[in-house]
Length: 116
Image 1: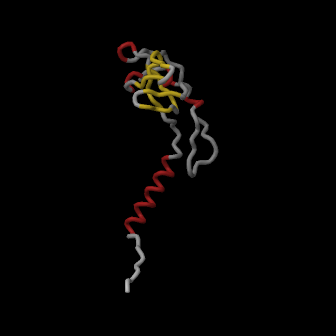
Image 2: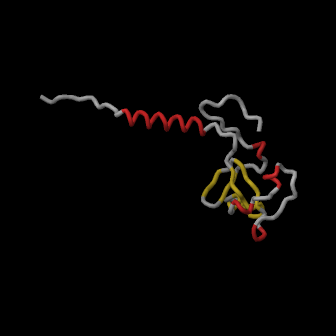
Image 3: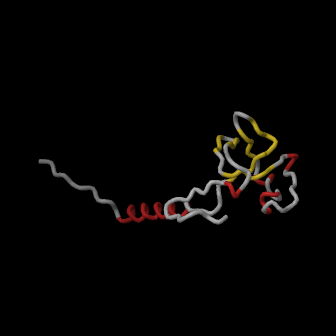
């Protein structure tokens, strides 16, 4: 006769699984939308905008709330933050340059929309 045993989860497995679920719930409710630094002059109809080093976006008008003098980034790259885009390799498309129009992706535990 074969004896059937039930598999029991160890308490450490249960705790780690619970911590993972809690971490996912907390991070899915972030206030900052996903952003990539792109070169505005690199638009390609098939690929979108070329993603560049984030240093090219520092000091741009979008990082100062649109009120500062816009400076060109590194080596003639017109870097600007591009929000909530689909990223494929070094290209980003279907996003927005306007942070206030970026999608509010509220996740588990989020209530209402953020005031931004």
